[in-house]
Length: 155
View (tube, rainbow, N blue to C red):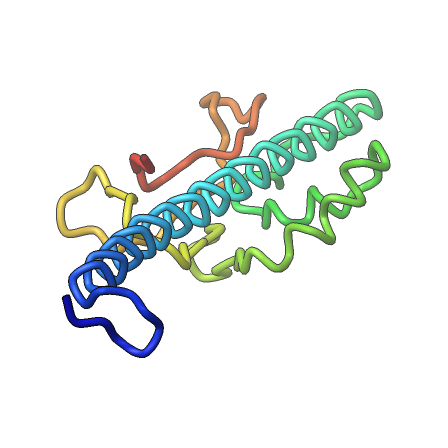
């Protein structure tokens, strides 16, 4: 049987090359999936912390007898920088690289996912843009929440 310069039969060399190619393809797909899952988790964690910051602001205002009326439409990123638990303040610096931005015309928090392979928007034809808004949840304005405006399914 004919051998190449390294002493392996050509058929065996070809077989190992194909196996290595398949393994690299599977590994690349797995790495992409893990990176996207990491981004999804980071976004959901950031939104959870913004909601916590909003709750802290509501409690602070209620304790001081201040109205909640100006909270709807506010930038939710402001609530990360507000005084509260030190872990919340430390997290606000880590969230900035996720590239959330506040659209002042629409009064919405906007996030464009970097990895969108497993992201499905529930509205047909919608851009792959995730948006939230600080809204009054009671007609009298007695409660305010950070509300998701673009329903999605990620994974």
